[in-house]
Amino acid sequence: MRVRFGYVAIALGVPEGSPNKTTTAKALEKIADWEGRIGRLRRLMTANLETTLRILRYNAAHEVALYRFTSKTVPLATHPLATGWDYIADGQPLWREIGDYVKLHGMRVSAHPDHYTLLNSPKPEVLAASLADLDYHARMFEAMGLPPSPSLVLHVGGQYREKAAALRRFAERFAALPGRLAARLMVENDDKIFTAAEVLALCEELGRPMVLDIHHHRCNGGGELAEVWPRIAATWGGATPKIHVSSPKSSKDIRAHADYVAPEDLLPFLRLARETGRDLDVMVEAKMKDEAMFRLVAGLAESPGVERAGLAAVEL
Image: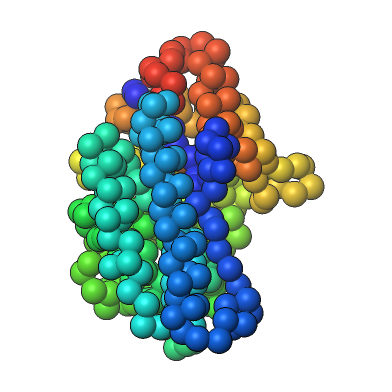
């Protein structure tokens, strides 16, 4: 089994490697004219896109095939203050260059809309904002010329006092999504409400791939991984399954992510997953970003039965 690794947004190995340059609505309101406001947003977006391209070049040089784009690429993209701004047209050459680079190097890229993107919210205004956020993320991938494959990770959302009804509402809302959005969604278990077993049943119903977060499963267990993993892997069809991994910050703060990932927090699962006979992609969610990813790969390679398969991959 070949296991590839990736990381989220910021590359610590790249000088000024954060593509998260942004501003606040309060600061933007101080700019009196609309053109001035949009000019400010345009400069920030351009800097973020240029940084993203530098990160992708760094990834290619270091054999990193997985990468998660930041949701902050376009600052305040869905805010009323940005209404009327065509951020796709303004950044088109860079959007396309990023997409071309991704395709040239066969990278697997994704994004993870923020926690306030709640498809199953009973509040119409929250649903409207969530749909706008999904549309923004989809437009980024479309601007890059990337096909409509699973690229947006989403949680089920809130429980709203009745879990079964919340799950049904998610399924109904998903069924009503435009095809261009639905085709990009994959669903992840969370650390408080919806367990791996519950999200798996939902994904099987919807015909969507499930992203297993091992750390969330430890915090919010539901079903033995040995039992549910073959079914989770099957939700990916012929594509390589993807999981998330992190270590707890401390024994008192188990939900927060640590700076690095301990190999022992992943290795037992890799040995279990090997039994399915499928390759695996692993997104490292750690404060130290690419440094944590490289350290995890090195640590795993010291374990019996694990061999390096490049700078950001191992084989079991």
